[in-house]
Image (cartoon, rainbow, N blue to C red; front, top):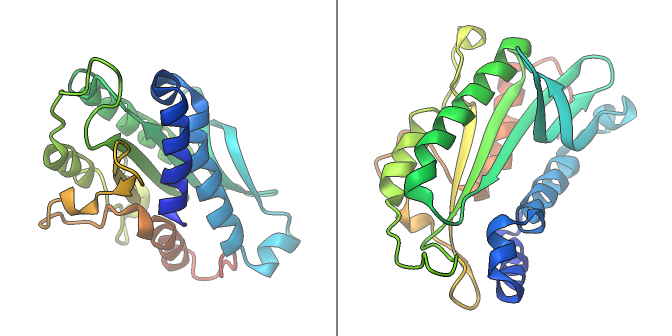
Length: 221
């Protein structure tokens, strides 16, 4: 993924209408599209012959109710193979992040209950500082949030199918949309995290997890 190009497109939406960037879908849909394209490019010839598809906003039946999953790779006979949730939170972060945290764990549990062998990931985008008018001086404790997401990352080992509420891979995207050009701020991720949370490696990590877990399935190059 050309992260810089995606952030530049997001920046244009922000400059045109900061309120839309906070509340509208066009802003985060750019990230949906970029991730979809990256996964599409990694599908193997065999997967393409099987009509394995990349679907955005797929309605996936979780353990209790349907979930709208932002990006899914779906086999026509076997269902979801890989699923990614994506969220952006551009303001009121201190008030809402803990509740969202509980929600994304619940989403993970629901999908893993139904599809324990699928690879499940999450991408969370936050600004260096809030961009909503009137909220610019709110302090975002990025090291705290990074450690929160690190704590729910890394489902693996031989007993992975019994684990719930732990994502296979996670990306915490910290972006500076105020400067020109906008930039990715991976340097704000603590150096002592247990897992890699960079967006630049996310697709590769998801694909590698799938390959390690399903050594007999030819889905990705």
